[in-house]
Every structure is written in C-alpha cells, then in structure tokens.
Image (cartoon, rainbow, N blue to C red; front, top):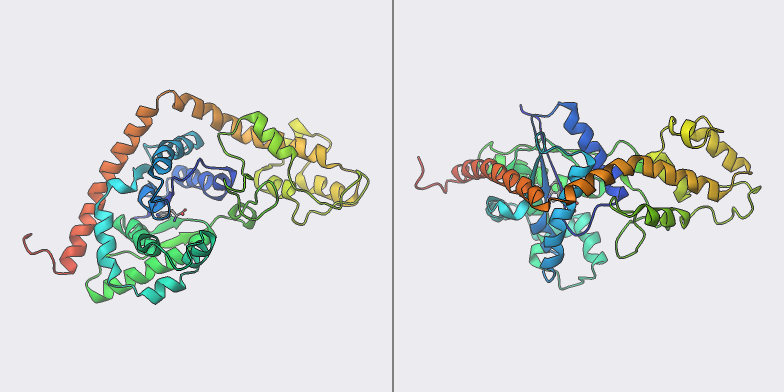
Length: 348
Ligand code: TRP
C-alpha cells in the first residue's frame, strides 16, 4: 500500500515557533526522508471559515502568509503538494455523504470540538458548519487516502473521528476508504511549546507568540521578557527548571554543538541546567543564549522568506497548481465513494 501523508493548518495567522517545532520542522524531515509516496499539505481555508465566517479578509490574507512560512521552512513543492482546501469542492461533497454516518451526540462528545466551543464562547449558538468540521476534516484526510497524518495531540480526537467514519463507510458500503494513523511530535516539549509568558497556549490574542517572520529585534524583546522562575531573584539563588519557559525553549531548539560558538563555558544543555539549579547563573545570560540559539535556526528561514516575498504571485501559482493536482485525486475518491453508495446512475 502507498504511504501517503496529509496534514494541514488553518490560515488564521502567520505561523509561530510553536508550529515550527510542533509540526513544520518534522514535515520537512518527513518530506526529505523519501519514505512517502505522496505528501499533501493543506491550507484549510474552508475550515478556518467555520469559526471566522464574518472575517473572510483575515482568512484570505493568511493564505499566502502560511504558504510563505511553509516554503521558507523548507517545504519543497516538488516533493510536497501544497493545496488550498476551498478549491477542492469534492471535499464538501464527501463531507455531506459522511454526515449520514455520524451522530450529533458523537460530535458533541468530541473533546476538541468541546474545548473549542468553550474557548470561542459559542455557548448555545454554535454554527452548524463549525460543529461538523470534524466530518469535513475526515473528508480532507480520506479524499487523499492518507495513511499518515502528522498532527499535534489536540488533533487526536479528529483522527479518531475520521477512523470511525472510514470503518463505518467501508462496512456499510464498500472497502473504499483508508484508515489513517496519526503521527505525533517526537517529544513532549515540541508538542506544546508555551507562550513567552509561560501560558500553555501560544496565541495572537494573548500576544505571547514568537512568529517565524518576526523582526529579530522583536524576537530579542520577547525573549528578554520571557517567564522564568519567579523565585530566582539573585544570580546566586538556585533556580528551578520546572515551568521555566526559557529552558523549555532551549529543550526545543538547542543543539549541543551550539555551545561552542555562543557559550563555550558549557559543553551541553545539561551542564547549563545544572549550573542554573545549583545557583550562580542569571536569567539574562540564559536568555541571551536562547536568543542566539533561536536566531541560528530562524535566520536562514527569514532570509528565504524575504526572497520569496518579492514574488507572491509565484507563490500563489504554486498553490494553484497544487490545488489542481489535489482536485484530481479527490475527484477519483469521490467517484469511488459514489459508486459504493450506488449514486452513480449515469456512469459506467
Ligand atoms: N484542524 C487542523 C488545525 O486546526 C487543520 C486541518 C484541517 C487538518 N484539515 C486537516 C490537519 C486534515 C490534519 C489533517 O490545525
């Protein structure tokens, strides 16, 4: 069986370092591993509209932003197909048919949907489109017969829902769809990088995110303002690593060979952590090092983004081509689905 990846993001803002360590970096590795027959990366604009229906301008403007972030991080359109969800109308058709296989109570129990309803304050006025987006996400995944879906932990309930739909479809009609597997980030730190204020979620509204395209000066300011150990007052005091955002970021970004250039008094991160917990290492010094570490990874990405930004129409053309290719694949699956459902009256 072919190994096929499908994954995606909602275009509601530029991507930040949390997206980078949690998914982008991994996608590039998967892409370059050569282990997959097809890779599709979806800019899920239709899904973004399920809770931004009144703000189409925001969704529109972020399509090229997200594409620029992908390409500057090393997603190569020759190897990975980047597509825009709304272009592929077959996905909405699949969603409609799959809806018959899902109950309202099953959607109500979906933990991600539950949490998002709370977070967005929908209370009892939940838009139907939003409520049913797990079904549409199952369509995204199954249209490409994806075997592997690299996602963060928060998306596991979506994957479970998709798998249930696949099983239900295949047993009710015919073995057409493929059950996907989630591929989680390798480690805990990378799967949920906190905001610079130490809060669990990095978000635009909280103003606590470091964006890939942030100006280096802004990144420096954000790093210098980062939450550390509030009881670590004097340099001599022993510091705690628990919930210490600066060290969480170092865990996600620092490679031991970075010490030689930026902070040769330590050989590796463990030595630095030991010094911090013993006392005698100040926050400012750790933060300055973190800034260097971050910039070592982000500088090449930012340089590439600057180049790509000079020709946004070329980026949009990559998306158009990718979407056309994706549409053919989805149309094939839709044909098979309709045949299995016996609604292909006029085809052979
Ligand atoms: N729900 C995902 C998010 O909010 C985006 C997404 C849409 C997605 N369709 C997908 C992810 C299909 C994986 C597979 O980030």
